Image (cartoon, rainbow, N blue to C red):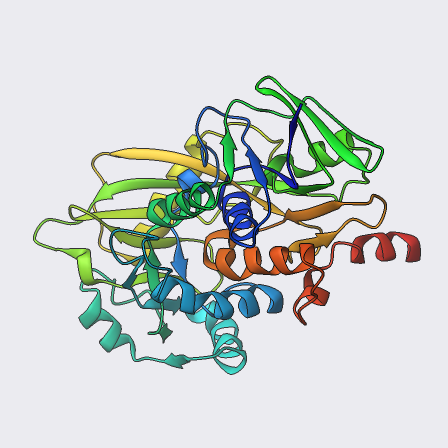
Length: 370
């Protein structure tokens, strides 16, 4: 039996960041990862941006609170900057114009931009596609690999341990201590943090904790060549106001396309669907003069949502010492620093204001009302 103060289940960005913050706070932390390498599923397949006007109110609050960390991480956290400026353009065909106007009215730092100006920034935009557009200039790319491995390095630097190939097989609480059996050995601690992503409800059931009703959803992406004669390196990310497709510049004159799909899936090593790949190309080509002769790379990841699509970070109402850290959906990277510090504060007995917005016990109250 390997003892610790805290066991964190799941070494994606949520679990790695939380484990690192807890270790830096002086706790003995073991981070348990089911796969042979951390971040194998959603984190390792994410191409993230920091976009303030993305997601519900709790996500926007945590996104804003995470900015300082991305721009100025702790000394030694990463070998190069974590961010690179990347504006975001929202395009509205005539049918989406009302949605775009609401986005501008309700957003922060989001302003209208003329379609002609958009075409100057993205020359391959078709002249007949957008009736209106808006831009969020204060956005940036996030180096997901550097962020994730920075947190793992931070964990080790403060005495924490990462155990891979340590999928939880049995979880029980005995004499005030959680005991977790894995192929890598048995681990014990008074506190368990459930950061298992798509497997979050499975971990809860194993521990005898009521599940939240998490829904993993597939998101598909593919990499194609930019049109000949164009270098998209400085182009913004762009997509439609209804979020049915987006295109993001990638290295070596490539574009990443996605149909922004959300297909419910069981927790698994998800693979791209051929129809979704075709939809991504079709929707992008409706907006862009973008010949596609080959797909260089294709992949899919799982984005896991709670029933109300807000995050769930906080203590379980039906089990002592069980902390939820799930429901990141598509926001896990851009909220990671603030979300991890929130989880740390809850473990240390503090309760910041934002904790009320993401308290998982809201689902138990809702269930009782229904």
